[in-house]
Amino acid sequence: MIVSFLACGWLACSSSGGDDGEGGAAGHGGGDPGPSSSVGSASGATTGAGAGSASSTTGASSTSSTTGASSTTGASSTTGASSTSSTTGASSTSGAGGGDTGPDPDPVSSACAALNNGSGTTIPCATTADGKAVCFASTTPTTLKYEGGEDVTGVVQVTGRGFTDEACVVLGTGAVHCGRHTMISRTPVVASGATMVSGGLNHACALVGGAVKCWGGDIPADVSFSGEAAVQVACYYHGCCAVTDAGKLYCWGENNGGMHGVGTSTGTGGPVSPKTVPGRALYAGPGQDHMCAVFEGGKVQCWGQDWNGQLGGLGASSDPGVTLVASGAVAVVGGQFHTCVLLSSGQVQCSGQNQTEGAGLDKLQLTPVAGISNATAISAGKHYSCARLADATVKCWGSISHGATPATISGVTTRSCD
Image (cartoon, rainbow, N blue to C red; front, side):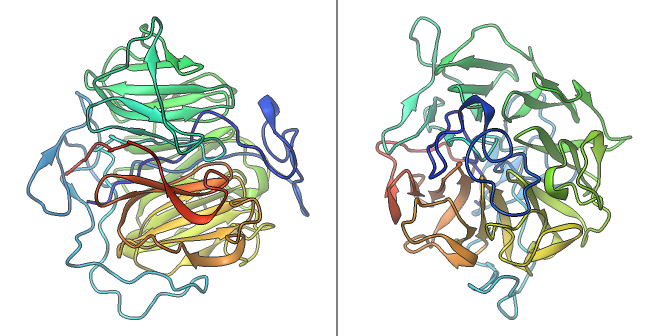
């Protein structure tokens, strides 16, 4: 099945503008923000969105049921995109639809919170097949451990957070545990009922009973949606976005560059929805100063800054958004200055700069990633991106591989949500 995973992490990568450190990326003390700088946040995606609340998720084969953490609140019996009814997504030209796309792609399911979901300015993590959590700033993964050295086990989803080696995990009990320097605390931040966690720079948020519970940073501690239940949360640099079971998209926190799509570039406290949306929201994937989401029909709409081509060179927008992909997308993730889209065909396409340290992937419009044709999940790190392949292995490209050619993360077999 197609499951969005990786999408951020917990250690800053270097860039041509120097390490951002605790202050963060452009607009927060590091790097060259480029022209038109009103800057700010980050996220990558991840674990998807459907409608309703349930505990089962079916993968591509539609043969097995997977339940996330206990007391799950997520997509209702949501199926992943089928390999036999795949649709054609955007061509290498931004916004192209690729002709007759066939049936609408299915959304990624948030009930299957097995893989990483968090801020795309740091590094990716993933849940392994044996229920552990790993993160990788290089092609050699690091296993998260409890204080004292014991591996964290029973993990159903992991997220990176901030630039100080921080991470949070959701266990099968529905508890959320966080830590620093790869050491996870045995004291839970959320005792039970969590189904997903996502991390930003200095904050993290979890889905608990259809609401969003946050800690750290300058954002609301508890966020609800007027009778709607959240089915996905994806945090970015200084805020978060959520998709609800009503198919609505909401963001809160900093609104740098107009990434909330409300027609201004000023910050907001509580959740707001973009003024112009193309239909039901399925999946949110905010980047540092841009925000994208997948809508019904596989359309990807984006708001925010485009100075590095992260919106496909289509121009900055605060309202209405720009159409990055016309149809056929199932997930989208954002890094510092780039965006990647997963198509239902298994192809990954990326647009923007600072992804490869000048190694050939700095494109101002969506361009296919060479050698990736059977991806089932994607993630954006700060200066690189990753894909989970059909055989459950992970490949990354950009600064992690020092080039445009994807490199395999050694010894990682990711947890399947089929």
